[in-house]
Length: 465
Ligand code: ZN
Image 1: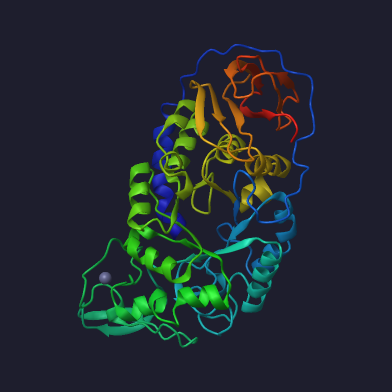
Image 2 (image 1 turned 180 degrees about the vertical axis):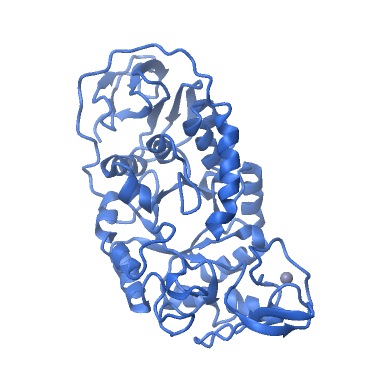
């Protein structure tokens, strides 16, 4: 349902962007280097210390994952993800939804049934049972990988019919989950005695009223709250909040204040100022997915105009609250996806890797290389060195143990090269993705000639890593 809701928006956006993707500059041809070298990612990173450039999150599912034993599938990948430098995993909503064993979890019925109770036609969830989930979380922690829960707090699904005094009709608002926890009825949803509605509703599902004591107690306020149960009993380390456009940012703020841990919100909005405003409204307790960065990259890499990388993004306004991503279970950059990953792995923000990109669609060796670059080399402020529709070069200036990088995006069909100014006068720099394998000596004034392969990227830093 979630997927369908945004499909039309995606199509409209794609058509709009495609219409001005045709104008391309004439490009100069360079001789392709003959050297090829192994991709640099040999240094295994075996703990969650995020490294100089910070950690990397994995969205550990896709839409309609294979039903039955998903927790086991993820569990089998933890060790290799740890070795690659993944420091946190975001799991899908893990409790019983209306669709029972086929639910992706975004239709929450019983927030305390992790695959234990026979209701909604199934004991297990789509992803497995409680024991499978406990095993996965324990294993992730043994690898110092944090586990983030997907919290669907806007709406519920699967209630039975009851007479609703606020609508004068019968509504599906009677919830008596077998866990015995968080029973709900008409007054817990909109409209009720407090509100006709709140910031938003989703697809006609019963829309939780967070101003009701029964709702706030069960979500974050009381000693028996969901926030405390997920933190202390399930041992989740952090939170991904679904559809926060549907309720006040104060709900997220109160939840995070009650449970602690990292938080990131799905505020589906391509306007960076709106994202910043939401982060502020939540009192700085939660990051937000950087949809502004996503749409800028969509324009840059899907429509071949790299100047869109100059667009406003949350990561440029508030780097420590931006979670950057290239695709997720709802939306996707179709075109030069590895270049998009190169962008988020070399820039500010907390990058999130999509399961299917990593495990199925893209070159895992190249992804591991980018993760290694993020954790080892990337850091500091960003300075743009070259901005044109067909070529784009940024310099991360380094910070602490991170030496910084120069990342060069080439949107043409030929090798390109440019003279740029580095921070590494008189030093040797190396291309770290294996694109060219070249080592260049930087001039005394910091100037150096760097190259990038066709429709791809190169990433440079000082030698020695
Ligand atoms: Zn309300």
